[in-house]
Image (cartoon, rainbow, N blue to C red; front, side, top):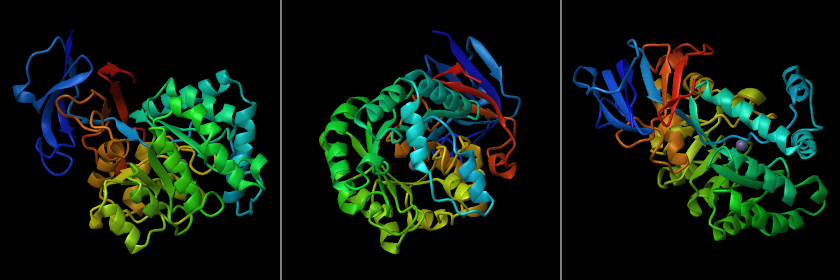
Length: 389
Ligand SMILES: [Zn+2]
């Protein structure tokens, strides 16, 4: 098996404080050796071992690939008109998620797969090497199962979100829909999913319904994660912590008790600033969560309705500008934070034994991700040691 030496790295983010300075474990003038898809050596370029191949980073910054732990990428159609109306100040009540559900149900497997591949490639070209992918635009037994089957052929991080909203056919019988989600639909979806998720929100599922969905998933071996406290205060965060969820996602409206619960738990607070950006809503307060000691992740929430971006760099820039995060904290949240939200230790860091998921920036420092918003800085991407972009 051949070895690859990436050397003359001006600034290396390892996310291992044992390797360098600060929580990012920053190393200057660094080198990395990759073999069989894994990192086998990290250290000073001056003491790097010989390798079969050599890549000269030219003094630029190398980081772990981004870990996008929250995305909705199995869908068809788009919602340009809805976004345009919203941004033009018109009230827009019709359509919404049901527009995407109708288009997704009408699409062929091949169309859904091609759409997903297009977004995964788009993310990869921007430095994202791990992507979580939810169902939730089918809302029938067959359509949810096929969404997860298609997602599972591209990522192990698949999430059953039959409880995204109540399916239109059950508008008058939400309890019947929860029975379906916790019964026949779960049976069809569990073999293709690692996680179970629920949109716990006014207008979606209340605390008791959300608990039923998550517990049913747990009984089938799925691990909970929760769309929590996005649009209003509510029980989502407390429920996530109580059930040992890997992540509570959105966390925009938090009481002091919610913040304390997250800080005292292993549940990661996943913040999704693309959603607030795209709906002109109030941003979550990352500073408050970090100061309390909670683990924070940043993700795109990429979806056609409320956050149609696949750019983790964009999320970092917004988190720094609007949410009280330092550039170091935002980069940490977009890499190892996402890995923790997915309970992964093999991605999100540049350490010996980790998967060689790496991104080189056309910049001397990771800080440029926030300092140069909107500029495409990705110069090269490796996934499991293979050059992808
Ligand atoms: Zn979401």
